[in-house]
Image (cartoon, rainbow, N blue to C red; front, top):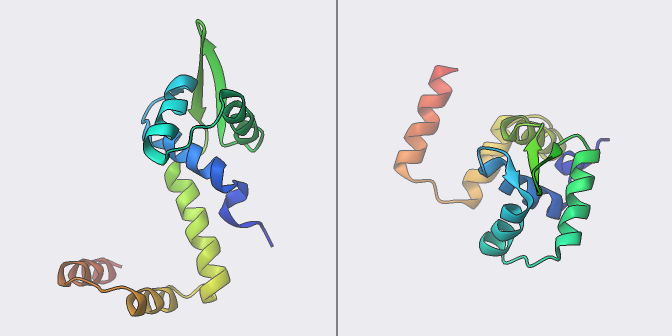
Length: 126
């Protein structure tokens, strides 16, 4: 069985989330600042560089230099990654049945009328 989370560790996933949310290539210094601001992660620069190298080795991003600054460019889209994760979880926990997932989620969470109507609209379109 393939590993869950698309082969990214929790920390690598958090870093990729910042990279994806940047909407354009992100400078390493900006990544460091965002991790501290958003997630209260004050990792050493060398630690983040190590994680970025692992992400690059896994094919999720590439790096390049512009002047003295290092930049990170996502190679795998957030949508593709999210789709892969959702499919893995659906297959593993719910035997590939979306209805089983939705039932479990609805039992655990209070669904607003608006969200229920939106889900109905999505289902009717399919």
